[in-house]
Image 1 (spheres, rainbow, N blue to C red):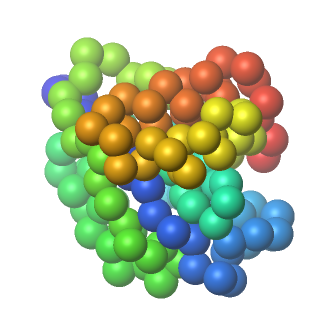
Image 2 (cartoon, one colour):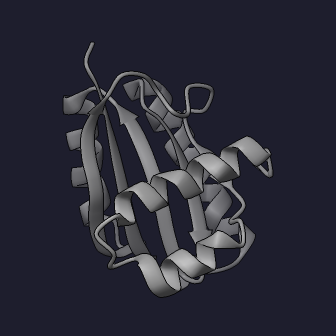
Length: 136
């Protein structure tokens, strides 16, 4: 199976922009659906934005992105990268919530529009996952 990774950023709708319970709900549903669809990924919420990497087969990713575009919890969803990958970057998690490292603020404030925004977002997610500052 050929693997792809989509990295996107979206503004969190007011109802899910802060507070733990809305985020736990998103992670729970995403984990269940992603297991069903053989997707893996990581989600970070910071300063009213979602930053996510999701990986899997092309068709499964396309269906998920279609659902996310219709999801009222995501505003201004923008795909930063959609590319083939050799292996999964988040193989152990159908969906994991990552705590934002300090670099997340810098990324959202100054680098979201940069030509290398996709690479920076991916590096941010990888950095957070490696630090294991992960909470359910």
